[in-house]
Image (cartoon, rainbow, N blue to C red):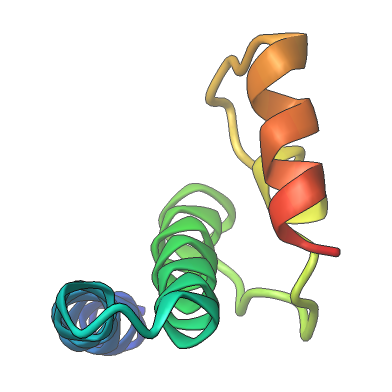
Length: 85
């Protein structure tokens, strides 16, 4: 499992760098897309760490959060749900 977690972390880091570059270029929709990818991959790394199993094939951030022990407020869950639309 460590190699799977490392994969999610490495690709999430690359995605956030891409999001930042796109944002600086005022390509906001694309920046949002890569920001979402980053969040998704970090959550998948946490799912793998906590469940010792592969993360499910989903892009729904709230679904991934609910597979972890992290406590999110309803406001944060609503934000993640909006980001998944």
